[in-house]
Each structure stands twice: as structure tokens, then as C-alpha cells.
Length: 206
Length: 71
Image (cartoon, rainbow over all chains, first blue to last red; front, side, top):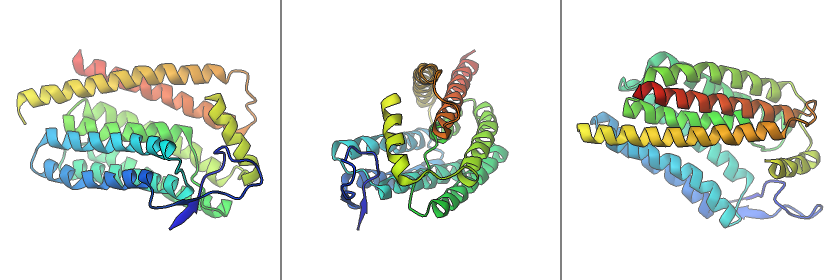
């Protein structure tokens, strides 16, 4: 029940990767996001927009909190990054399907978004196979779109310019998945030894 | 849902969307300007440039959406 910490975390070169238990506070916060899904479903089923809104709000806040907890307790790991990405997909996918089924969101953009989300997951799986190691592909553009997806659920629950936001999301998602797909399938995979300093430089630049 | 609750949620969405969109617009514009002299042949630099542009577009979409709702 442990996994190595991701590269570029300040360890001296040549030292073996620090082993982090999977049962750590950051992963506990990530896992707790699943607890917001039953209240969300209950609220949508009973037409309780306010309860549904606060459920998705808490889910989004916990998404921001787990990264902070990982930094404070120094328990970042490859497993944690993958678990966080999977939890994002499950939670926001579940909420999108729920608002779709209950007619709170237009079905065409939701179906396109879910399809592209599934395609993106397959591309990430292909990238892991190409890289030959459990690495979470980092995409600056997709990070921004994931935040947009969380807002999409909130817009549907609040009845807030739903058609506008859902239809503007679709072309953005198409462009980002096409861009990331090319990088994951075509561009050369950077070796781990080269990737670590590049990642460290990225943190310094931003 | 009561009218009051809907109004409260709408204002929370307005404040949340507007504040995040404006902050994001400034943040990604600043990031983009910092990368002006970077080597664009580097895949990581290209990915960051693309991500920041998507971030700016997303922020503008958010601001326009809020304005559409209120005006």
C-alpha cells in the first residue's frame, strides 16, 4: 500500500525515491469527495437545487484542498496524482450524467463532453503504456478545462446561462483533446531523468 | 427551491465565476507574457503556451456568461 513520490520534489539526485503510503491524509481528502455524490443525487432527484449546489461546491473545494494537504503533510505520490485524476473524472462525470438524466442540462453538449472525457482517459492509458511507467500526463490546458467542468455542473444546478456555458465548452474541449492526443500519441515521451529538472524549472517559472 | 434560495445561489455563482475568471485572466496573461522569450521548439513551453491561451479564453467565457445573465 505505498508508491514512490513524484519526481522533482526537491530530493537530491541519485537518492532512491521516497516511499509514501497510499493511506495518507491527501488521499483521504480525495476519497472523501465521493461522499458528496449521494447527497447530490438525492438533491437532484428531489428538485433541491440549493442542496445539490452545495454538494458540488464541497466536492470542488475538496478537490482544491487535497493538493494543499499533500503539500502540508509532504505526502505527494504518483498514486495520489492518478487517484486525484480518476476521482475528478468519476465525480464530475457522475454529476454531469445526473444533471443530464434529470433534464437540467442540454444533452448534446453533455454527451459530447462525456465522450471526449472517455477518449481522453483512453489516450492517457495509451500514454502510460508508451512511457512504460505509471505517469500522469500533465496538461496545462486540461487542468483549466477540469475547473470549467466543475463550474458546468454548478451552472446546471443554478440554472445559470446553461445553454451558453455548455455549448462554449464543447469546442474548447475538442481543441484541447486533439492537442493533448497529439502530444500523448505522437510526440516523443521525455525520459524520467530529463523530465524531473524540466518539471522543477516549470514550477520555478510559474 | 424558494425564490430567495435561487437568488442566493445565483449571486454565489456570479461572485465565484466573476472573481475566478478575472483572477484567471490576469494570472494566465501574466504567465503568457513571461513566456515571450522562451524557446518555442521545447514541447513543454509549447504546452504551457497552449494551456495559458485556453485559460484566457475560458476566463473570457466566464466573464461574458456572467454579463449575459445579468444584462
